[in-house]
Length: 319
Image (cartoon, rainbow, N blue to C red; front, side, top):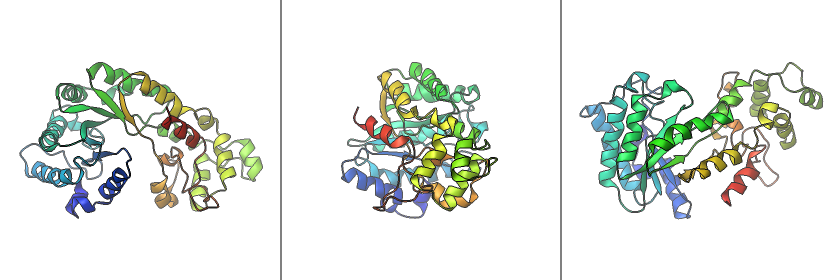
């Protein structure tokens, strides 16, 4: 949302690209991100303050550019991550997003439906409290809101269940989105692992090479497809979880309350920051369906698929 201070909403690159996708008959979801923390380390604005009025003015700018054009508008991105923890349970976070939602509801028109978004880290009891309870009550009790978004980025596949266990009993008749989900926290736990003996022997790499070092090397000089595939195939922490997409989508759909789920397509950010990849870097790039940053392009110039995900991702479109 702060980007809207720089240029007209219709010229915002994200909005422009999403509107082009809508014109091509793709389903579209736009989340309104208010990055108060940790990006700026500012407190979340209180209703009636100049800072709140500035955010409402930004909302007023964006809505004419997207209403009745995008299918789903999500009010917020990751609210509990994007504001100080001191504001989670004192009402400040809820008051801010409810105030924004009231303006969006007032200006809503056409096909666009509204969700609140998105809850994170629900597998950790520290991330639930009076703030999340009020969040879910607002979702459930506000007729114009269709449901809530969820972002399960977890350290084990079974931790996604906590998101459903918390949300479903509190939804009433509403639905949920999962516009992001991944095992990025599991991948991160293994960055300091040694590579497999099989990979080390096949590619003549020192046996004490760490996972993060292989990724950094691939970012500096992209691998052939077969080598990247071998790296992930011989990593049990990855290979044993390559059914993650199908397993989780099966569970989401079984609830009868899933509206839309989405999954990361491209390693774009990793391609820009490859030189800085280290043992503590969140390895988002292992999630992506395509491996533009770590794998050499296909002969026709297109991005190569990331090991494991493309076939699953494609099959799930047809169910």
